[in-house]
Length: 269
Image (cartoon, rainbow, N blue to C red; front, side):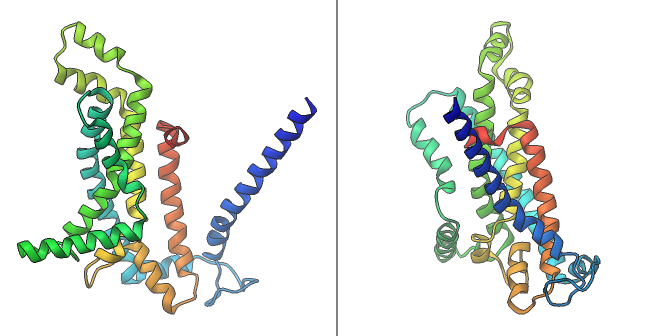
């Protein structure tokens, strides 16, 4: 009994230390964003929200935010159109090569972002040489790359939702005379709604914060928000980046809370 108490105490200490190392950088970024200093230094000379206004005035941040939002929204929609039917087929279907297809769908999650971004860039260049159709450095090419990023997350979360619900209700609907399409539309998709919502939100987050793939595929005269942050840090040390990062933290945090409300993300890893 005493050993169990010691183990429990140690586990709580480890959890607290881990949370401290995870949360402290976020709190520090939010704190720095309200410094009045023109150069980040401690202690602060005062506090204010001028850096949030400054971030919105800068074209790179404003246009980067809008482009990231547009790309993430389009990539999430495409990911839903591909990922939801794929998840239905993987959970409810029984066909040759099912395991291989599942591995292919999940493979973008296993490849480092820099490797995937450079590979996509080379592929787009080769495609352009063969077809004379430019894909690299265009909005459609960037959306296509981000769609590859969103599909595995949607498949994973929708699959988790379908597995948890089982197929008993669908079988009952079929026995009562419902057509397969009616079952999908009136039974399967409503039951899988938690996974659909969580998959869409989490995919949007992953796409919105992506840097590794975007940096290879972005076109001249345009930039996503993560790239705008990196470019700004090259020549500036003021808290503007902290203000932008704080807005990102709030958006991502809200989306994660909504995702976890529908599907416990810990069950999908």
